[in-house]
Image 1: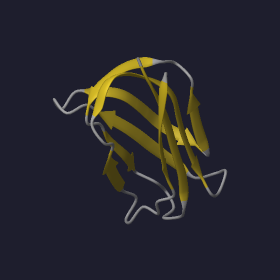
Image 2: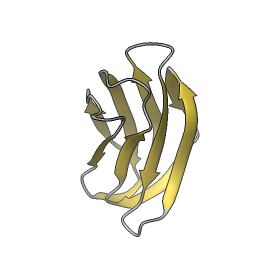
Image 3: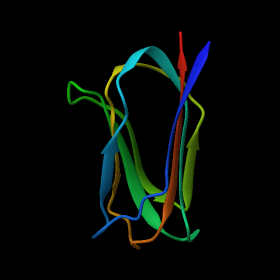
Image 4: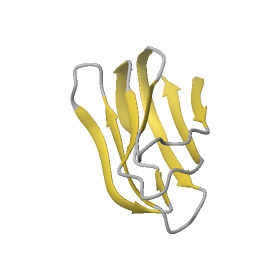
Length: 99
């Protein structure tokens, strides 16, 4: 079993930040963790596959999201922080387990 970790510390500009993962081959996403510096910051997190389909969308998150619900992944995934009420540093951690 091979674990791939996506770990970034971005600061959104005008409430937005986006990036993408490397190409994933037959893996399972085991954790999506996004945390703002300030616990009262409100934001959305969107994860989209390379076909443009939204696979996870967390809206009006306050402070942090820590989703441990696994979902299958294959290809490149876009990760976005949208509508952040404060442009501050975030922790973004996503864990993929290759089958």
